[in-house]
Length: 360
Image (cartoon, rainbow, N blue to C red; front, side, top):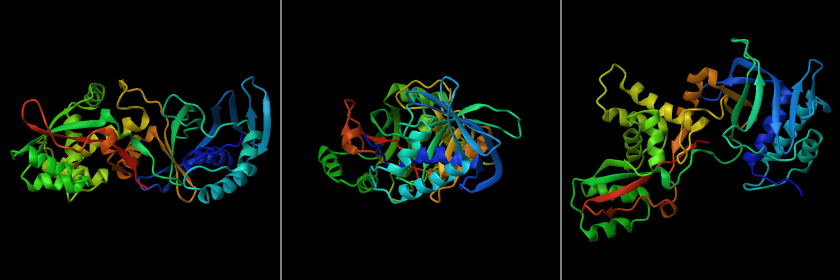
């Protein structure tokens, strides 16, 4: 049966081909520009039903080693470059959903790849042994792959666990008012109507205890901080970009920070959340601070170039995440957010929902 996948899935195979053809990967800045700093690739490890290692040799060949330590194939690095270019063109011309690329699948078979995405229980999409020229270390690291060739991928997925509860203060809503406001389908217009009535959004709780604990694990202020950011995102003059929302929260300074750089205080909190969500934390599983994608991020740019955000350069990883992510609202019907309701205590409440996606 022929392999079929979307642009993001085919991008993982493209990354394998491209890295093996180049034999190295360059670091990137916050705007995804390639830096002079690069990491030589010593080995790429891929595990499907069998384990294969891809080792660049000084004779400009890639030697494929099977799980028994035997040579499975020996192919020139130039061939990998050619296959990567062919695959890149096919991905760009591919259907918006799922499609087959027979020529690339044939080459995959020659190097021991049977799947587009290697099975993984964590956030690492590829494992690479690199040579860090500054530390002279050669660690085996897991990297998460993000591709700009397909639709924008999520960093933190929406769901019932990411709902955040607010109490509406400043106005006494009647039951008829609640019905009228809830009848407004568009989220921003519905939120505007609440504000026009004189309503204020006061953070109450993260209703899912595991997600609440995870946020508290990161920073005791994190639940309220994220709640403040979501309110900014839901206002009529809203901005969905993470960095801009944080600046607006910093202008309000809800935690009363008195240091010289108030924006840096709030920016740091967001970077902590983004980094942990990128490298391991999920809302519904207890987070203990151990990263799955312990290498960092590989980003496939629209032009096919790949840049690396190595966890050793933590500031670069954080800056990339901070300047390339945005808030996105999940499904109101699926995730039960965005509607006013009266609680048992007589107060009126609303839930907002946290989802973070990469910008294109």
